Structures are given as C-alpha cells and as structure tokens.
Amino acid sequence: MDALKHAIDLLSAPTISFTLITVLFPFVFPPGDWFEKIHRKLGFWRIWTKPGLYISLVLITLFFIMGYYDPNFNITLTKPDNFPIILLVYSVVICTWLSMYKAYENDKRMDRGEKPAEYNDPDDKVLVWPDLVYIEFIALIIFMVFLIVWSVLVAAPLEEPANPAATPNPSKAPWYFLGLQEMLVYYDPWLAGVIFPGLIIVGLMAIPYITTSSDNLSGFYSFKERRVGIFLFMYGFLILWIFLIFIGTFFRGPNWNFFGPFEYWDPHKLVPLTNVNLSEYFWVKWIKTGLPSNILLRESIGFISVIIYLGVLPVLLAKYVLNDFLKKVGPVKFSFFVFFGLSMLSLPLKMYLRWMFNLKYIIAIPEWFFNI
Amino acid sequence: MSKKKSKQTLIERMGNSQIWKSIIRSGIPRTRRQRMHAILGSVFLHLHPARLPKHAVKIGYTWCMGGLSFFLFVVLTITGIMLMFYYRPTVEYAYTDIIDLGEQVPLGIMRELHRWGAHAMVLTVWLHMLRVFMTGSYKPPREFNWGVGVLLMTITLFLSFTGYLLPWDQLAIWAVTVGTNMARATPFLGNEGPGAAMLAIGDINLVHAGSDVRFALLGGRFVGEATLLRFYVLHCIGVPFIAMIFMAVHFWRIRKDGGISGPL
Image 1 (spheres, rainbow over the protein chains, first blue to last red):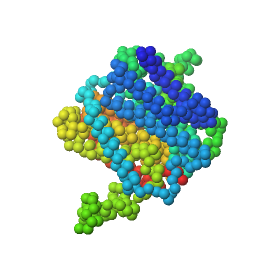
Image 2: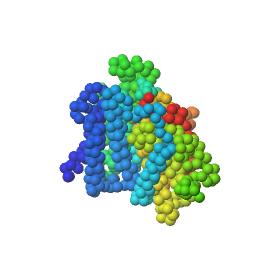
Image 3: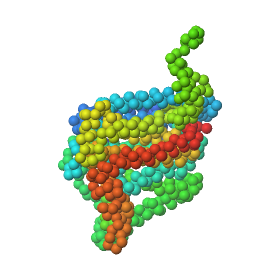
Image 4: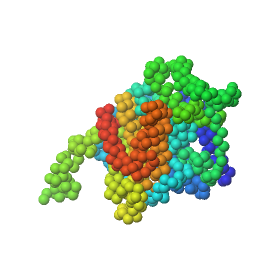
C-alpha cells in the first residue's frame, strides 16, 4: 500500500501528471484521422462505453477511499470547503462521459445513414403540461432534498475570526479560482490574474463566431462532426481548468509548494529557486557580456520571441498548416482563432519552459511591472 | 345528486370552484386545449412554449443543468433574504452573527443551504455550459445567447466570490485578499500593473495604491471594514441585479432563437 501511495505521489507531480494527460489527451479525444486510428487501436474508445464509466468511477472512488484512510490526505479531503471539489470530480467525469457516450452512439447512427437520436418528427410534439412541468417539479424536489441533506450533514466552514496580521500558509483563493492561482506559478499577476481571465471570457464568447459552424449541425451530441472543436474546448475545460483546480486544492501546500496527495504538508519543505530569465540566459550565459543597461536592448530577445510567437507563427500556420481552415473562414476569423489558440497554448508552453530550462521570464522588466 | 356527480373527486370539485377558476382560467388541465392554456396563461410557466419536441424533455439530453442553475438562483435569493435578517456587515458583528446563525437562529441550516447552494450553482453552471457545447447548441442562431451565457457564468463566479468574504473569518479575508491582489496588476489601472507609471502628470502618479482599480474594489488599501460593506452591497443587490437582467435576456433569447436546440 505504501509503495502504491508513493507511486501516486510521484505520478501526481505536475511535471509528470500534466505531461501524461497532455500526451494522452489527443488519443482520448482524437482531433484527426491519425489520432482516431491510434484511439481505436489502443482501445481508448472503451472509455466512452458503459464499462468505461463504471471502471473510472470505481477507480476514482478507490482513490478517495484510500485518501480518507490516509492520515495526510484525510486532512485536505475532509475539509468542508473541499467537498464541492469531490462533487466536481464526479459530476464532470459523469457528464463528460455521458456526452461522449451519446456522441459516439449518434456517430454510429449517422454512419448508418440514420438521423441522430435527438431527431423528432416536427409534428410529433409533447405538451409541456404535463410532460415537462412534472419532470421539472420532480427534479427540483430531488435536488432540494439533496441540498437539505448536504446542509444538515456538513456544517458550512467557519474558521477563526478574520485576522489581518496572521496570513495562513498556504493562502488560497476560492476553489473555482484555483486554476487561475495555479497559473500564477508560471505567469505574473497581470497575465494570470487579469489578461488570461479576460481572454478566457472573450475567447469563450468568440467560439460561435470564429468556427466554421453551420446551424444544421447543432442540437445533438456528436463527436465526429466537431472533433477539433471538442478537442480544444475539452483540453481547456478539463485540463487547464478542472485539473488545475484539482491540483490547486489537493496538491498545493505551504508556500504553494507541490505535495503529493499522501504526503505530509511540511511547511519547511525547501524547493530551490533557480529560475533564470531569458535575458540572463542570452547575455550572461551565451554571449558572456553581462546584462546591458538599456532595458529594451536587454529584453530584445524576449520581445523578438513574443513577436515571433504571436506575429510570425500565425502567418506560418496560415501558410503551411491551417491553410484549409483559413480558406474556409477568411483572414479575420482566422486571426482571432489563432490568437486565442496560441494564448491558450502559452500556458502549457511556459510550464514546460519552466520545468525544462528553469526559465523565469521571457521578457523581464520588473521596473515597469512588465514580465511575461 | 346523480351518480355521475357523486364520483367527482375533491380535486375536480376544487377545480370547478369560482376561486380556482379565477386564478387558473382553464380549470383543471385535462384536455389538450386546457393543458396548452395552463402554460400560456401562467406568468411563470409561459417561459416555456406550450409544446416541445420529444428530445427536449429527456434528462439525458438537457441534464436539467440550466433549469437547476436558475432554481439554485431562486433558492439562494430566498435563503439570502433570510440571512439578511440576522447578518450585519460590520467588522464588529459579522463573525458573531454568522455563529449566531448556526446556534441561535431557528432553522439553523439557512447558511449551509446558502453556501452549499452557491457552490452547487457554480457546478451546475459549468455543466450547463459543457452540455451546450457538446450538443453544438452555441452555433448560429444561438451565438449571441451563448455569449450572454458566458457572461452569466462570470457573474455567477463573481456573486460567489463577493459572498465568500461575508463570514469574515480567516478563510474569507485571505481568499478575497489573494483574489483581489490580482487587481493590483491590472494593466494601466492597477498600481503594480504594466503601463500604470505612464499615467502621470509630471511627477504626480495618477494610478497609485490609493486610487487604482483594487482600491475601488476594496474601498481601501487592504481588505477591511469598507471592503466588507462594499462586497455586501455587491453581493446582495449589485450583482444579483445585473444577473437578473442577463437572465431575462438569456431566457427570452432561448425562445426567440428557436427554442431548445435540436437536429433539423
């Protein structure tokens, strides 16, 4: 048991767990034909069958039971404010599975030339009274009972009275913002706390305007019809949002250091801070001249990299990789799509730059609070 | 009394009474016509169309998540109003009032219902968004309503965030401190944001710790008495007011954009 716990602790380190799920992700939600082939060959499609759901639920439950009986994991797991995260894990797994299960069923039907399961004869409608109002009424009662039972059993959390002089360690934002707080490890607050949340909101709102969608493909579950869209959305939602919340809740201890789920939260854990800026890499390590005093000259390499990433890369993509997509949607939609896509990708990119090269900032101008 | 009349159930008699008929004009909805009238004639139910395609009433398709989000908003409004009877948003009383809510007040689970309901609402809103995305329902002609929905999700998070401060315990002030510290770094508008130093007249900085967007949010330089009042007002009146406007648009547009999505 201890060996298993130790293995889980090691695996859950962001460097390993994030890499694993990122590499596996395109084979679970295959965005293209090649991925689809491997997806079939490796049997990942079984995740979206009924046994797939049962096995995932059993595994998650076993993990939580193990945690409940572990003296260290028990502390974080049984915090009343973390209970919604456990609900979140179950409901997101069940809902993702349900949508993919239904999508695969519909894809099969449409392969046979049938209409999706949601299709009805337009003349064959049901009356809202009683067919819908009763369902709503029953759903409300069940949900209200659930909420009352939850409220009776679990007292709402209340810690000691507010004390501005005693900063708890770790200080965590409300759980639904922990994905953003996790981003703070890799980006400065002006990006992780302001620009990225803004881009998430605007980017989500932009989805229907920048895709090549036609209205006759809406209103039913399907994977085949929109596999690239689902792949991108699910990567953002499941990995960059839900998974980071999970990490932030259970794996981030004192000083925001990483701790495996079964590890003791040692406030004295020492993590060497050896992060180096790109400018220091360039001027000090490679050219060996020391940092120039002119700020813009010092950070010129960083500016050039950012301009290449956001300015040149889209042009290259338009020319060589996404030329079909560009033709379909035109240059304006294409630019927005690539900008939002690259912004989303910049988070995992910075994570890996940090993990592999200890890179702190690409552009580091603390004088102007301008660090990327 | 004829044999037929004696078989009339209590409900039927009630339905034929003048009081009932004055409230629900159609009487007990038995016939197709009466049932449609029950929906059209009710100010609450007429959010719905009178008839729906079959897939629209299946929980497997809708997951009920949009409806539950709205239901939770109503639950939170009602429990929130009750909490407001007891809670005073001052540094002196806030924490002790919260303790009293659990220990002294009858039906002492109102705070639990409110807090867990709020967490549940964040979940149901996210899952509603997931469902809408996975069914492709964000596509034209519903693209505007998807945008309204994204804003409603943001508002839900902000509602939950403003409420987080009110118990005035360690969890509350530090979570809100961590959250609002971000505002300090807003480009141009935060005192530690890039570009803020450019907004200066000569040597006088226009954006400093006493005038930036974080100051506006907190009503001070740190999370204190003014913040508590500010978040209380935002939580109880300001944000719900905005939420209700957007919800009205959201529900209206569901109907105007062709009702619930479905394959053609």
